[in-house]
Amino acid sequence: MKISGKCVRLGDHINTDLIISGKYKYRTQDIKELAKYVFEDLDPKLKERLYGGSIIVAQKNFGCGSSREQAPRVLKAAGVNAVIAESFARIFFRNAINVGLPVIISEEKFIKMVKDNEPLTIDLSSGKVYALETGLEANIKPYPHFMLKIVEAGGIAEYFKIHRMFPWETKL
Image (cartoon, rainbow, N blue to C red; front, side):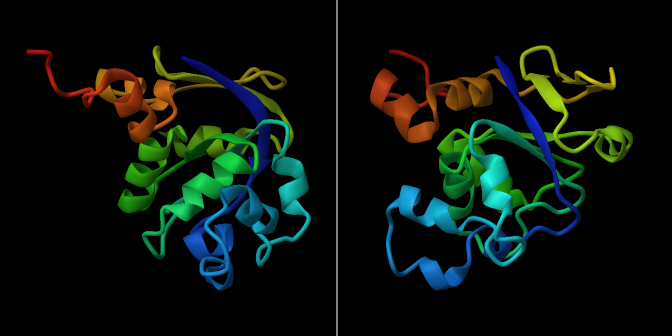
């Protein structure tokens, strides 16, 4: 599975309240409506850079804070194709996979050297990420087969709708 998009660089400790402010979570459950406010408290103009297919490249502890599933869902609805970071909050990582948003742990060297707006390609099957303008390349840990299948389907609920079972279950 290959994913492409333009790099949108962010820093350390991007928490779920920066992704989507808690003040909106009770107003609506419409993810497309919530996506209008993505990163509003970090940079109100940042959302404009996400639409059309982006890959967020962040540093440490991306998705820390609350365990709201809205955060990865809003990123996906706002046009984020994947998130690459040095590390993720564990619950954010799992929520992202469950909603079909690829999240990739990469080495610090790649994170620091990739340029903002640079086209990126991620190959989840082979475990590589490429920065096309600078020629940077990094090895990433390939997804286990069952996680790849969840992401390919668009999330765990979509996988279940298609297969009527979870990817780790065997057919009887």
